[in-house]
Amino acid sequence: MSWPASLSKRSVWIAFTCLSALGFYAVQSVSPVAAFWLAIFFFILGVPHGAVERLPHQRRVMMPTLAYTALYIVFGILVYSSWLISPVGTLVVFLTLSAIHFGLSEPHTLSLGAWVTLGSFLNYPVETLEIFSFLTRSDLSVALAVETGRYFSIICALIVLGETAIRLLRRQSVDLFRVIALLTIFIFLPPVTAVALYFFCFHSLCEMRKTLEGLSRHQGYLDLKSISKLYAPASIPALIGAGIIIWAVQAGYVPIYLAAGLGVAFIIPHMLPVEKLLELDRA
Image (cartoon, rainbow, N blue to C red):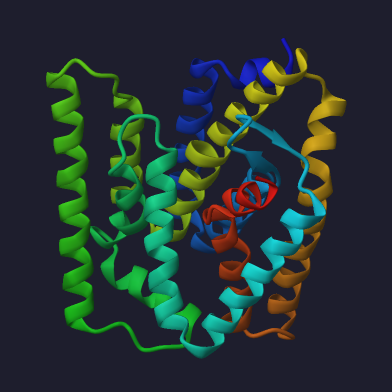
């Protein structure tokens, strides 16, 4: 059985996700520092899922073109400029777009996008705000913000449960494992590890599966060469860049504040409909 074929098997994905979650929990209990670096590793593994250009009008994907790459870089520069001017405001935009982006990628439960963005506030409100404060170089750890974040997370959880119940009553499709797993992960795991687990196991792998299925339909077959040709041109520079930034931060050459801005500037264009702008231009 080939890797893409095995990846499409739901049982394999569930087993891998459960083992990853248990592994994170065990490592977190022994060494939070090791859990942090494991989370960074999962984030890096998930980067290639966005290294493609989608063609909505043709319902297929392709290697990023020069026009797409140029537009992506322009958006990234604008986002980074925004971060330098107002990191907190840019962070709010980033979290809002993340909730929408993740929600739209969910197969049945749209509200899960908001939960995976704000769910950590339920059990880890102080830690979550400390992370935001650290990344933006701002003082956000105040009692009002902590309670507000917790209330928002409770509302998100209730909406997820309500949406799931309504779909079940209407006998509509719903992925109960996905709902229960994501609620559990963001309640029991710290923010960084919870988001990393979701990003790779629930978002990146599933998006890559859909991409490879679309590629297989378009060309009639799927092999390692075609997968590498699709992902490698953008994935390799992105992974090298991520590695350099992590090294520079660890070595003290780049402040975490500036590195966080670069990360946000790299991610936000991925969540914007850049392809649709190019589609209009082509039309």
